[in-house]
Image (cartoon, rainbow, N blue to C red; front, side, top):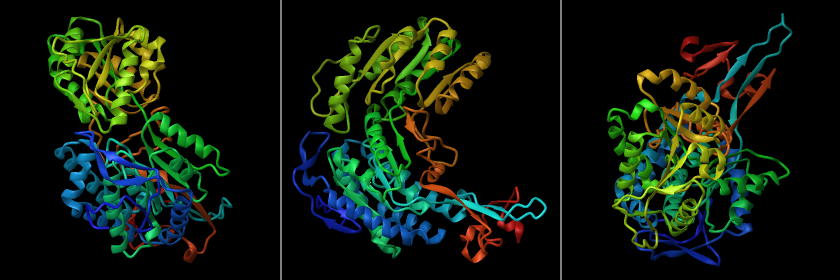
Length: 532
C-alpha cells in the first residue's frame, strides 16, 4: 500500500482484503463532512483468517532472537517517520487534533518503539531466574523467565490515534514480547489506521518476518470486536476506551471455554485534592492556568483529565472556581468525532439536572449552538456530601468539563478518599505545614489509584520505565500498566523449566550468556558482565 493511498480495505497478513456492505466513512471533525473511502465491518471469515495467520506467525516469531525483535521495532519507527505529511494530514481531518499535537504524538510513538527495542535487547524484562540443584536440600534445578503468550487482539483509543492505536502501547509491547497482533481499527479514524497498518507491514517485510505477524480489521459495530476476542487463537486483549466498551470485551472473553487476560484501560475521574492552606494568601492564582490546561488538554479528551476537584469551601476556593470557569468558557472545543460530541452534550445535560449539582456560569459564557463536533465546556459545583450520596458524580464525562467539590472539613475529604472508586490518578496539593495530613491522604490513595501526583496535575503521561498507567477497577481491568516498559508483562507469562539439559533451555537461562543481562542466580542478582 502506498503512503496516503487509502483503499478502504482490511489488511490481513500484508494483503488487502475487500470490505463488504454496509459501508461507513470517517467524519471530517472540523467540518462534519464524510471522508472517502468507504470502510466496512470485517466478516467472521476474515476475522478467523487473521487469527489463523497470527497463530502461524507466532510459532515462528516466538523463536526469534531479542535482536530481531528490536530491529523490527526500529524499522517500525523508521516507517512511521517515512509516512510523513500524508499520515498527519489524514489524522488531522479525522480527529481535528492540531498539527503540533500530532507531531508530538508521532514523536512519542516513535520514541516508544525505540525504547522497547532497547528493553528487548537488554533482556532483563523477562526476569531470568536460575536456581541450581541443591543436593543437601534435595531441590532440583529450576529456571524460569517470562515468555510470550501468543496472538494478541488490540483495540486502539479514539483520543490518541498515533500513540494508542494501530501502533502504540499495546502493539509495540506485544511485538516486543514476541507476540503476533490483530488490531481492530478505530472507526473514528479508519484512514489513519490504514496508513499505520502499511507502516507495520513494511517494517515486517523489511525484517523478513512472517506477514501474519500483523493484521488490521475494520468495524463500526460491536460484532467485530466480540468475534475477535472470542476466537480461540487469541491469547490476550489490549483495550483503551470507555468503561462500557472494556466491560463488553471482558464479558465476551468470559464466555470463552478458555479464559484469557483482558487488559483494559477505561474511564477515570482523576480527583484533585487541595488541602486547605494551598489556596490561601493568593496562592490559588498560581494554579489557575495549569488547572485549566489540565482540564482542557486535548479538548478534555484525556484519560487523565481531572473530573473532580476537591477544596475547602472558602473565599479563595470560590475565586479559583470562577477563574477556571471563565477560561474554560472562553471558546468552543472541537471533539474527535460526532459520537463523542453527542455523548458529551447528553452527559453534561444529565449532570446539570442531578440533585446537588449546579453550573458555575460566568458572565462570559457563550450559549451559541455548536454543531457537528463542536461543544461548549462546562464547569459544575457540588459538595462532598452529594458526592458520597451520588456515585454517578464519579462517572467520567469525556470532554472539557469538571466538578468543583466543596468540603467543610478535612475529615470529609478523607471520607471521600476512603470511599472513592478506582482511578488512574489522584493529585494531592499541600503546603509544607500540611505534609502530615498529605501523608495520611496519600496512604489512603495508594489503595485507590495507579499514580499519585504531588502538587501537580495528572495530564501528560510519560513513557518511561517507572510509569504506572492503570488502577483498580473501574479505571482498568488488570494490574499492569498500559504505558511504559512495564506494559510488556501484559503479553507474557512466567514458565519454569525443571532439570532441563542446557541445549533445550531458552538462551537467557543458559549458565553463560553472550549479552549482558541482569539475572537472579541462586537468590542473588548477577549481571552477565560480572560472571565473565
